[in-house]
Length: 243
Ligand SMILES: O=C(O)CCC(=O)C(=O)O
Ligand SMILES: [Fe+2]
Image 1: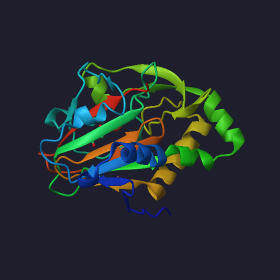
Image 2 (image 1 turned 135 degrees about the vertical axis):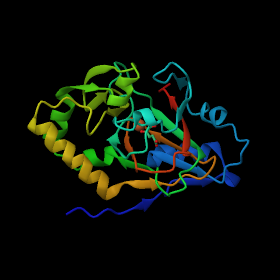
Image 3 (image 1 turned 90 degrees about the vertical axis):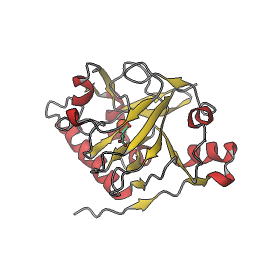
Image 4 (image 1 turned 90 degrees about the horizontal axis):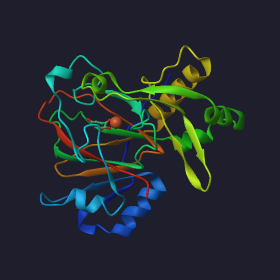
């Protein structure tokens, strides 16, 4: 039986004491940073560009708006009010996924839902044997876009190992609980459940307030979202590529 420990964010900075060097070092150390107490006129994009170059979203734009649309209510999609399963972003892109994903809040969900939850896959890797890690780096699986992104005509597919080892650079994890073609592969099915269990036990939860900002290392952390009912909830998203 898994018990959910709702850990709140520890890697956070108050805007009043915002310092770029500290921001970067918290991001590097913990894999994410939450910035709160942010004023209305803060230039989120301008600030985040200091971390890395912007990468285009699915539709080619640099900023993606996250607001639930009724037409997506019955699909698995970020643009509805339902919970999402743990995933990394852009696992189904041919090239390298964005190194960082940042979300900032225009309107939080008044019902207390719509939180972002994050888990550290580099820590998960430490729970595996050398043999399991080796297999994870060698075995490739087809990744596909979520049903919602496919419905928008923006779907992609790519074949990757879940763990991409690189010379002189940190490894890149790609994960999606439900968008990997597993063909009943026992290794993958088992690993998927272990990631979910690890995530359930260790994730941190970010609660948005107006203008607050959450950024994480998408090569390292998996994210998901809790469900919500308030359709006024509105976030914005950018991706930053590795320099
Ligand atoms: O918090 C949300 O609504 C969307 C989360 C998400 O998976 C994303 O933007 O990549
Ligand atoms: Fe996502």
